[in-house]
Image (cartoon, rainbow, N blue to C red):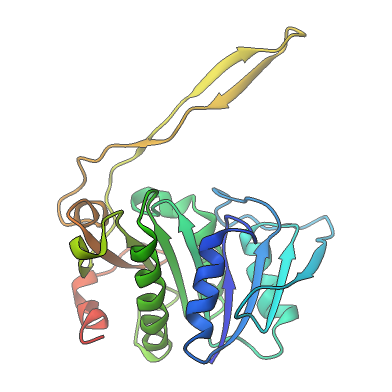
Length: 252
């Protein structure tokens, strides 16, 4: 298959390189189009009135790799519209450093890039690993998700949906079976700290994001807190009976 990889943490993210090797190891033709710099929380933003500079780079496992001065959605669009020789069979976005659960899926550049592919009728998957996830767990997650992605191409998923996967920060021996589930309804708790510059001007720093971990029962955050990989089909209207698609995760 022809697979396009994108992310929002930037071209030099080690998780992107790990994912590229995992996908290439399964014999696929891999094209990478990733932001040249960190582009988290860009959601579905893309560039309209400015040129987008791009530089060809090397990445182990990639048949072609580009670092693009743009958003994650810019990278996805340029990838399947201009760089890929053939329309991709699949787009995988990630692996993001940090969960994309709950309402964060509406903010995430990782999910946004995958959503752009889904809107264009290309099967799309977004992958995220929580901070402090052990390397062997991330490696397993990359290999497992690469295999699952092959199933996604022919699976009757909801129209225009993104298959969103998250893995918890637990050792391999504690990792539990994947669960199909809805997103939590809990919100991130953050604020801005106001400071004053030496010239008397005000500026604001976003405080570290915190999430209420008393998650909605049966949701992605709930299952992750119990050590399970989670899978959610995200759709434009957000209305999906996730249990209807539980067979997607079976017998892999």
